[in-house]
Length: 507
Picture 1 (cartoon, helix red, strand yellow):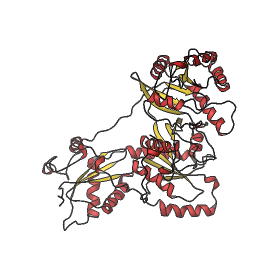
Picture 2 (tube, one colour):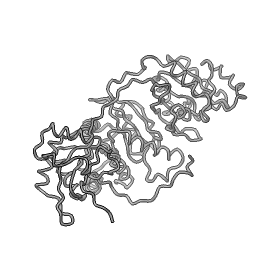
Picture 3 (tube, rainbow, N blue to C red):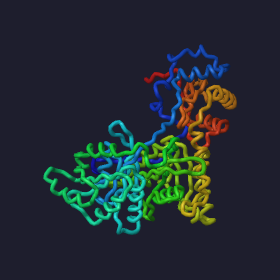
Picture 4 (cartoon, rainbow, N blue to C red):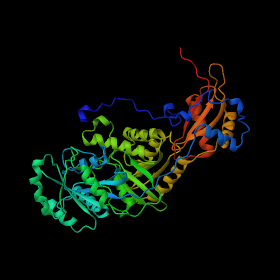
């Protein structure tokens, strides 16, 4: 789909989502409730045991999710700029994941995608174009490709059939001849059988038979995948992951220091950094061992103010960032402390809140702060972040490493809240106390009665109130505040939904 065919984003006034609200369409059939589900006279809600509450939860379809653990091999796709590496990655994946644009240099970091072929799951690692004679940001991109070549289980080197061997191809092939892992030479842009003669020169690279492929049209890709799987070792080269690492998305507007933070915590140049906003295009993932746990960090592209202002690969980058947030478990929202909190910051924050992920806010570039700016920031926080008292805020400097040791405890606390489940017995004891202290307001001359509550799900926590009448948003905010006072849930959004037993008919 071309950029011109993309649906234009509608202008909308920015409003923060209410954390106490939930779209009823998000709840499963097991979480819906009406008078026909069961007779409430069968239950004495004031005097139920934990076993009886557990039976009721099971009747409502509440269940716990488990983590998956796997050991997977990696194939790295390498080559000079603009030979079609990302197009080949998308062909391997069977979906459009890697950002593709018809000019060199779109891919800048090494990106891992989960793929499956022949019933076997594996990682495909896309890399930026490699060139030994570049400086600045292009040199950093080349280093990422070199790391990919050193850590993969199989390397696929891509060349351009229409161009033939270049000096860069020859230098890369010479490096790969010394590789300890299998190398497959793929001659891309092979669009017709008449090009077999053009392939003959690639034997001079010393990497064996070239595989004719047209990544754009899908020709030859299946044969290469069969060969990749055949060459995979029994055990992956990298250290085996026996415990599923929690997924952390680094989000924020462009140039707030997301890539610098990833490089600092991973103690390597895992993500390409440059002072120009928009350096990161694809979400960059990295396994990072911190003091207490192993984490999977994802460095996302900075989100523009409006998607419609993005063009070409930037438009797809914004879609990848949204997908990275949805796939994460905790988001670290970076805000540039040296600049005023902007509407753009609020839009990114709104996206995270709507996703329902655990959240930590990090004010970066603290090394650039002075006393006047600190006073201004305090006022901005009071005015613009007052609705988020449950979020941990830390002041850091990705450049100097200031206070980065506080990041992991904040993420652990947020995820523990995000995962936490309150037993239905405890929940209803709290509910009776909260309602006794402040009953819900009357509606149409009737007092809504809250029969009982249950935690329908975790990640994020969803509390469902079964009532005989509607509870307005203000009262639900009161219940959320009292809920947090009793049970904590610091760092995690809490959604409170109401299930009204008696449905009103609309005229």
